[in-house]
Length: 498
Image: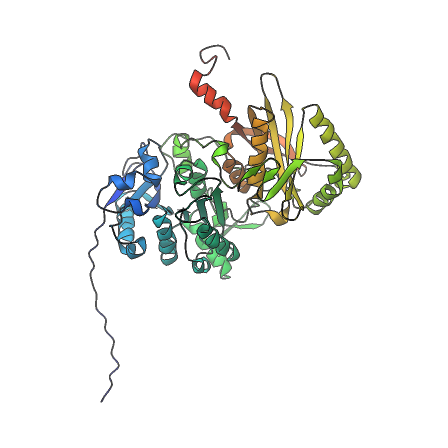
């Protein structure tokens, strides 16, 4: 019998058909408005079928249907009954192609999110077509940890409810851990006490949409080229140092910025009227209202003395040695973020005096310094400081914080800030807490925003940092009990004198 080695080459044309919902930003005009970012949303099993209202009753479409005006075009395909998203790749990509062709979409800012069954679809689609998306946000689902190696340059923000009995939170935890081990920029948010429907909190959180806009496709690709040892486009700043094009963009990749450094944050500027080349500027004033602090983000449960992972208590004399060691260890790390300090501050006697003053200040309701320790080890890893407490008609305070360099990126500071904010509102009965942050520290901006703070403006040359006067972004959070009363009774003096 004779053998022949042959090869078949034949073009096969496939016809695909899938329904989808499309949402356009308020004021968006085809052919007139600037390029808009796009979010592709994959629904859960309850949205499958042929009835469009099934898609609209949950997840991101439900948020859009509620009247929220977001700075994105949103495409929400509908999966047929009896199949999963991993069998519908061609259909979803065809919808993505059509939306990009018909509408003025910014190819740099295409994002992927999904709920439940859709979250599994997010991981599957992202690993097979990583070049199509700048960042992903799976909700109440899971994915194969083996995907992490291929997605190590894909920014991911993962959400899950701790009490989810349909898909356990461990599914998200497993792939989040695999992504961390692969070196990916990944955040895992667990909502204490929430079940499978935590999407209500996820898609009402303005921080998610700002996080999306911080990421671009070119930023991801630049990181991938860097890991491969290839040259990347760069520009030289005034100091002569080079920085990558991805880092120079307004909403570039932020994985290399210390996430929780020194209580600083943020990017801010005057918002322009639509249209604008910057999506956040064009739609910033119409972003959904930020959820209140008790709605939860990274905290894994709150206790009287901290969280599930952290012990958070007022400073005492027994903490002097640990505090001295922590400050001395991080002296150089925080030089670019902390207020200019005398060398005495970094001595044991300096920390002794600091603790003494803090104890005295708390006794007269002027300041409250909390130390943050790992609950499992008892190791001191940071602090949160409520300063300049004002009573009378203000009922306010300022907040500052820092986290040990080795413990950045674990969500610890978000947990600690949320706990101290809760203490300030429920125990100290404060109305308002403010934070001052440097504009370039985007990582710390995310920490504060996840804790419920909102940006309010910019103070020029307000604090001397490392010998230079620096601008600071002003952020604040209000006691939800006070805002609830205003909503019920109306704001007093609305028509009176200021």
